[in-house]
Image (tube, rainbow, N blue to C red; front, side, top):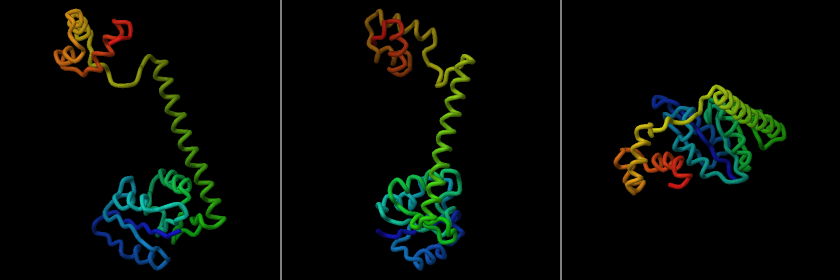
Length: 189
């Protein structure tokens, strides 16, 4: 069980040394530092390395939670760490310490809000798709197989041309031709 520090500064002009020093003083055995990366960027190099390095039972130590994330996906990050049995502790926000009963309670509340957010997004997406369908709109990209191309594909198919040959002739992908012809050939391509 190790204590792993993570520090981040948003611009190249800022110096992360203060955060790193504070984390080491508080017991971090190793500190990962991202320099010049926004909290909105999820795949920051040292953050990814930190997540990869930590194991169950470890504690992630940060100066402030906004070093990890400044947006709503922070709830998801905390929930993901909890699922991996990784604690999180903030030096400047004492309520954020999942190694304590109060911190675990806080984590539970955060996990509930993270799940609520996921469920709400899913529900809103499904409602939006259902409404669009009721208005006659279907999602996805429009097909490249225009009526003229379908007619040409059918004629080429009557000449025993392969799907690959038809696609090359029409300048479209094989799957586009295959899907279009399947409607006329009884589902086979």
